[in-house]
Amino acid sequence: MDKVRIGIIGCGGIAFGKHMPSLAKVPQAEMVAFCDVAGENARKAAKEYGAKDAKCFTDYRELLSEKDIDVVHVLTPNKQHSFIAVDALEAGKHVMCEKPMAINSAEAKKMLDAAKRTGKKLTIGYQNRFKPEIMYLKKMVENGDLGEIYYAKALAVRRRGVPTWGVFLDAENQGGGPLIDIATHALDLCLYEMNNYEPQMVVGASFRKLADHENAANIWGPWDPKKFTVEDAAFGFVRMKNGALISVESSWALNTLRADDGKIVLCGDKAGADTLGEKNVLRINGEKFSKLYTMEPDLSAGGVDFYAGTVGKPQDIEARMWIDHVMDDSKPLIVKPEQAYVVTQILEAIYQSADSGKPVYFD
Image (cartoon, rainbow, N blue to C red; front, side, top):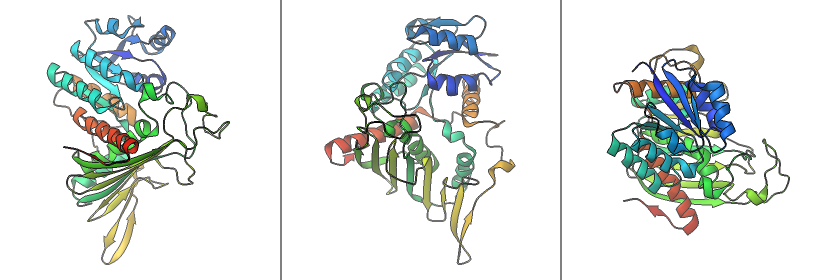
């Protein structure tokens, strides 16, 4: 396989802002088909990123009927992720689906089952795993430098960062607000660094306290309270089967001066780590020779080549490694669908606990 022919389903903000620019930097990737219910979006994408023979569609099923497409990127609202991904897998395509995996765990399980049934490759767009601080920290964890990680924080907190475009505020299409939108990244990073995908129990709470404010201060301009049908903040505690605890904090609008979006904290019995540093982002803390220390590795100075040719933005590395894996089974699949499924299970459990006021237990 000299070229991987790709179909893009959903030509909105995440397609133009992340996937298509990153795929355009991969020499082996060729975008040959574009689909969007708004035909002009598909045509714009084809003009900017498409191959000479690129085709445009408004019905994703017509795109899937194209026999020469190898890979499909599903970049639609959350509600559509599962059925489009399953149809694509059944049509013989490999699938990259933007996060979150699905609107709930039942839909995510359909995707997982379809990938196993068809033998096609499936991954989810958790590009933050390819940040230099996360890759460096992963090496430290695997080396045993932190020891047993028994407490972690997944932080996705914004003071006023409500997305006002698309369907982000629509519970029907998105399945939730900041918890499913941005906390999904931070939770994924915690589970990935801990290499722990066995939750035992979840308790959570969600709030809609600021959403009705008219003309609210917001980095993307005031939101429309009438369209704001999801939570503005949600929090949870996840107890893992080995006793480890993960705190999950998320908000689009919260009266706080400490806003940490996509950040994590890990506490081990040998050392701790967080991505809260201002200069080099990653901070390692511990005790040595009866003294406390803090270390901030200089991640701008090069060093360990974590993955072959890892240079560029996280989304660029994600795209290149995904295409490498499609072309060669020996190349690693960094974001496994089984892992993304657990993330979805936990997020859903936080919502369920928030609704019921009771803990949610896993089998």
